[in-house]
Amino acid sequence: MIKRQLVCFTSLFFILVLFLNGCTSTKSAAYGLEDEGYIQFMGNLNNELTLFDTSKNYYNDGITVCIDNKQTFKAEVNDIAKKKIKNTKTYAVPSGHHTLQISHNGKEILVKEIFVADQDIRIVELP
Image (cartoon, rainbow, N blue to C red; front, side, top):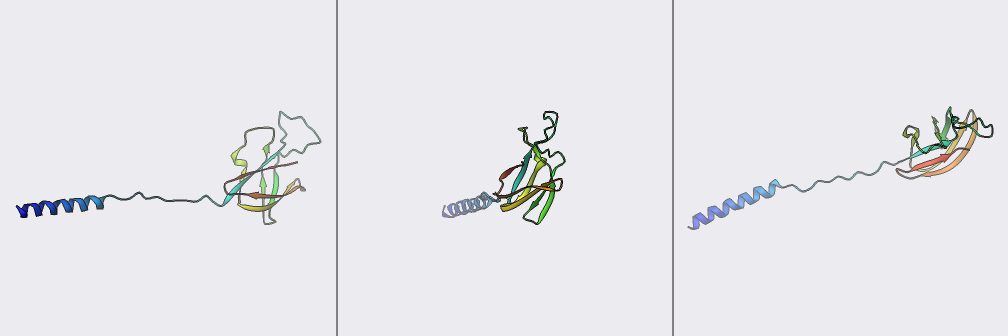
């Protein structure tokens, strides 16, 4: 009788050990946001809806942007008259303080200090 109880107890113990070893805890991973923000440029575009007005600048051919006197690139401008913004006209920049120098047709039109937070979209309106 004792032998039978010992075998039963030992069997239950091994089954319990196998069952507990088969269970795994939930594995989780945490990933932070990338250390970059985004800039969009808004300005007047000459399209069918606007008349030729010599008092306005039209940026259909794009602008040249210089960030912190280091990085220069050609950027497209979103139409300020439209509510829909194209994501292809959004530019990634490192988060933090930046000095933007924007020129159009060789003339400097805007110098602006901006702060861009992580995953933030900063809109720059052109004159």
